[in-house]
Image (cartoon, rainbow, N blue to C red; front, side):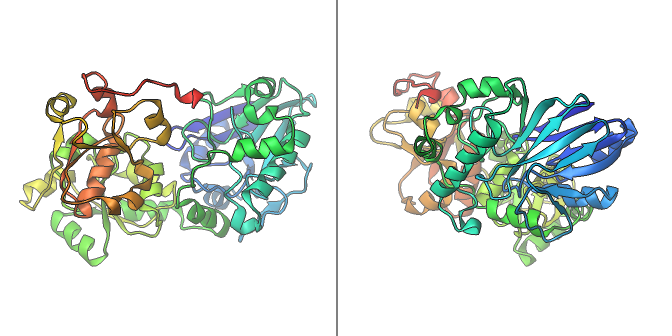
Length: 468
């Protein structure tokens, strides 16, 4: 028996590859299926089942393409109603895999069909739990995503989650290994640990949600401080439930190389968004007017989903040469399949064509410290609320990037302001959005708060985020 966790940091997502005696199962696969096909061929095993813990909201699963290529059936837990052929298992139904077996535990709460998969080894011992979005390390799944579909409040769903955890999972043995669907950084929970594997026994000790005295306190604890989910979540659920275009077709469209002239003409005729995936340093110096910068070397896909939102938005890519396929692939993971092509030769080709360019007014933290008038000049901190609460520049305004489409309209275009995040990645995203919407009276700070903290700028006292 072999269990392999395939972890994707950008999405903080864990897929699982399990083999036993010539047969394999894959749990919650990513959109691109070739890596799984390569593993199956290398190991000389046949894919018998594709298990889905639920209809995912934060990414588009590769279940349909993988099933089409291998003829392996897709398995959901009870109450799932996919628009395609699948096995909708009963609670406690057991599926054999080589010399081992996998038992379905229906654990509604995060969604109504949410299920965990219990791995039973060749000796009949329960050894691992693939807990999906029901149980994370240090946290549990948020209970507010399925409200509309379930016609239930988040408190009612949290009550279901309590029953699932306390009657189905907590009675399991302490030595069982927990393999969750997500880790720290995912928007599917609040306080996930950096670790991606742990024992159930340790989670029983340290996970706040598993140490509540009653259902009422559990509901209060897991719903307290929930931030609104990213707006693209509902669209990803629909794609996972209804179906989507084959990944290979999406990739073919996105890999269409366009000259600067063709790129410009298509951007105008298709009302396409120009997405520049270069580093914030390169983008600040020069870029195509009206383009949005979300760098590949960061939480690329989640920020695309949170800020662009509409998965049907036509997109044209500007990437570093050679990274076009990576960009298209990572966009497809969150459902952005309408990539019309990319700028052949990257930004250098645009520049050599003599076409118009733009730039961001960026200064160093040292220059900011020397010129800012504390108490008079406006400073906007776009980090998360928890980062701001831990420590921030005195008198700075908290305006998280995730909500830029809401707070941007309150900006006085006549009033200059300084803009920063933690290190420059997010503030350049914000700067590009602001300039695309016509706001130019601002200065972005290179290196963000990490660099500012090394200057003499007055800051609030530091409070560890874990204590907030």
